[in-house]
Image (cartoon, rainbow, N blue to C red; front, top):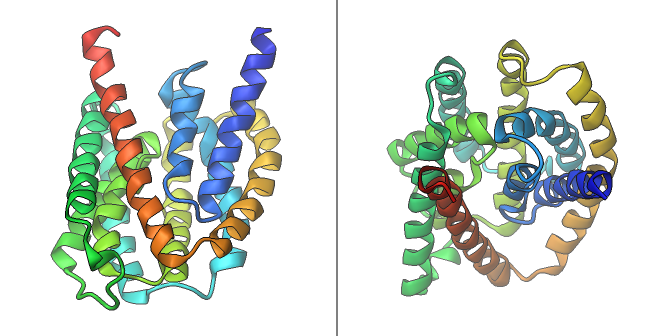
Length: 253
């Protein structure tokens, strides 16, 4: 029975990654929490990184023409800095503190959006605040390196920009593809990816790849206004999960 549960959760995490890369908001963030039921979050993060990268390749084929270059430039600079900081401080970081803080920030932002019922989700061509962008993208790069939870900080920056649905998804896919590639060397250097973990990652790539195409086709069917409502509610829900993940360790839950 334990073997069945293990492979069920392995497959489920791969599907979450693939559907998230296919454009369904924040779902990929569920990968590490799912695997954390059967292994440490650090091991789970190392196991999933190759799966993220392969899923990125297939997602890029679907969204390679849909992106915002100004947003992408800010994101690449910020995330590069965040990954470097993450790599240099990984051994000193208290993971539950980072998880809790990201959860709180995402929760407050999503709650603000939902309570105000902002029309900003449908505004087009909102002005880009570069300072805000560099800050949140650096945080996204750092948290992505630590636990693959770069989605909430990234969405705090991008949701108010009023990007078209395809551009929002495409920019996210391209940027996180870049982020995952630059994370690869420090992950190997820190010993989070080895031969045994990579064998399991290879198996996970199959359901993840299928899930990418499912996600891409589902995104096409969802109306734009509904899509961004889903994005905001997903951010809200995931943030609550991150808050719980953060507080349960010091509480001994």
